[in-house]
Amino acid sequence: MKILIAFGLSALLAAPGYSSPVSVAGGDWSNIPAARAAGLHRVSSDVIAQIEAAAVDECKLPGQSKSYVKLSIPFLIQFSPSGEVEQVVVHRLNCPGVEQAVGGAILTLAEKGEYRPTGENLEHWYRGEFRFVSR
Image 1: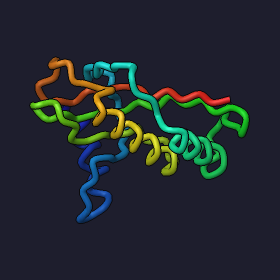
Image 2: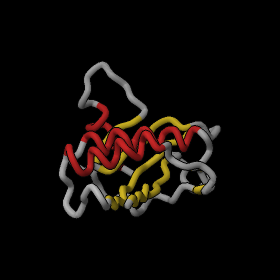
Image 3: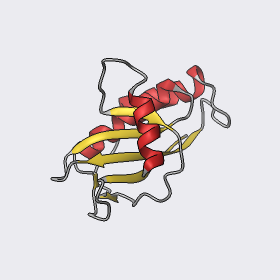
């Protein structure tokens, strides 16, 4: 967990005086338990359009085109002891448009109950993966 805290704090400290529930960081998160996904909620069409535009036009991510975008983005969610979402951390892609759109989407989905803690982690951090395909 020390690696997570170091990366998380550096990402949060990047914007002095501003505390956001969504940040970006890197690292190996494989040792963090997976969040439980309900499979009930979907991302809005506006967010899909933002992700596509950022991946293809803004950042020109490798392998992406106007007719095909496929992304798999790891993320972390920190829940309070009572289960509320406290923070979302999106794995760094070096594409702010995608990171912001995906981070906002994950935050919204988690607040709606799409992702829930399992009780496996006393520090309340859980991981997931945001998968996106459009054709």
